[in-house]
Length: 363
Image 1 (cartoon, one colour):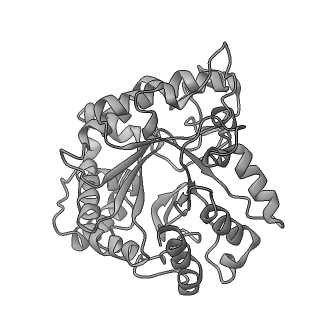
Image 2: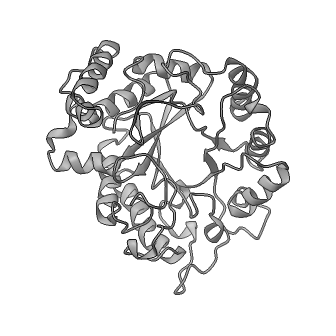
C-alpha cells in the first residue's frame, strides 16, 4: 500500500529519472483497502506499522530507516495517503501527470482468478466499498485542492472471471459490468469533474468489444458514451501481453477489434469513438527484449493510430518490490529501473526503444 522504491531513493530522484525519458505521466496504483483503513481510522496507516505488518518487526524497521533517510520529510508516523500526496506534489513540481489507478481492493499482488479481487462482489471486492473509495480519491485529490497533477483516474485494473463463478455476487458479463462501472464513473465525476475516466473491459482488460461496438450488453442495455454528461471525459484502456507472438498481424488484429477501432472515426463499425490508451504492456529487460516482434509491433501500432499517436504506459517502472507474493525485496526483471532504483536496468533498451517511443508519441 506504499509507492515502491522509497527505501532505495527519494521521490524526487525517481520522478526525475521518469522525466529524463521525456515521459509525461506516471500510473500510480492504489488499493481500496488503503481507503477503508483511512475511513475506519485504522492504526495500520503509518509508515512504521505498514512496513512492520508487511515485512515483520526486524525487516520492517530496517526498511523504514532507509525510507526515512531517502525521504527526510517523512517520519515513522507519516501515513500512506500522505506518501501518495508527496508523490503527487513532486509530480506536479516536475510537470508530470498522475494517472490514478485502482489496482485491487485487498492489497496484494495482482492478478489471478483466485485472489478474491476479480469481479464485482468477489470475496475481496465489495462493490459499495470500491465505489466509495473511487469517490473518496476523486474528491480528496481534486486539482483545486491538493493534487494539481491529477489528470486521470482508472476505475479498475484487469477485471476477470473468478475461478468459481459462485464466488462473485454478480455474474461475469457485460450487463453487470455496466451496472457497476457506470455508477462508479458517475461517482468520480460528481466528486471531481476534472480528471479523465479510464474504462477497463473484460478478460484482464484485453476486451472492450461490446463497448466500442455499441452492442446489446443484456436486457436491452447499450453503452453510448454520448449519453453521459461526462462522456467527453471517457477513455478506453487496453492491456496486451502477447509476448510470444511471431507475427505483428496477430497482435494488431486483436487490438483493433477489441478496442482500438474506437480511435478510427471513419470506421462505422465502432460507433462509440473515444481515445484508447494502452495502460499496460511490457517485457523482460534482458538484452534484445526490445527487438522482439511483440515490442516492435506495440510501438508501431500505438504510434500509428488514426487521430493519434495513441498513449501508453509500460509495465513496469519498479526495479523491485518491498514484498511480492511472500518474497521480500523481490526483483522485477520487467522493470525499467534496476533493483536498487539507482539507474536503468538496461541502458540499451532505454536508448534504443523507450526514448524513441516517447519521442514518436509526444514529438
